[in-house]
Image (cartoon, rainbow, N blue to C red; front, side, top):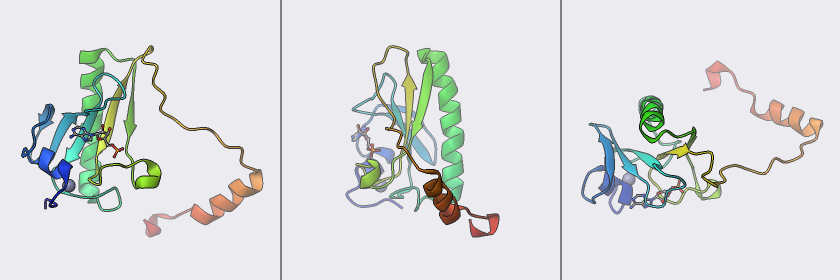
Length: 141
Ligand code: AMP
Ligand code: ZN
């Protein structure tokens, strides 16, 4: 299903033109208009899902397979030195477009780009409490 007024639904469906690198019945892969590095691409499912929570599991699995294949294309054709997969969910995590997308970002030794976080000091008792809070078993997922 497409969502009215969703720009990525329109791009994925071909209503809005894009620099398309790949398309099949489930996905369109486009170049990001504001790239972090040369060749920064986005995997867009054609079915609307706002984020990872809403994404069907089969689609989630297929996204990772496609990302893996794209990684080889990027390495072979762009000669990149590395690659980031990034996927943001919710405003707090930096999501600006409310249609699931996976960033595939080729990286170069001299790209002067920063993608990362500031490591925080965490006392051992906090780590232990966190472990208790979010340890899960196979039956819970
Ligand atoms: P996020 O912050 O994870 O939601 O990422 C949204 C990404 O979409 C950003 O990297 C934008 O540069 C990119 N973007 C937004 N609009 C377009 C568009 N019309 N075509 C291509 N990329 C877009
Ligand atoms: Zn959408």
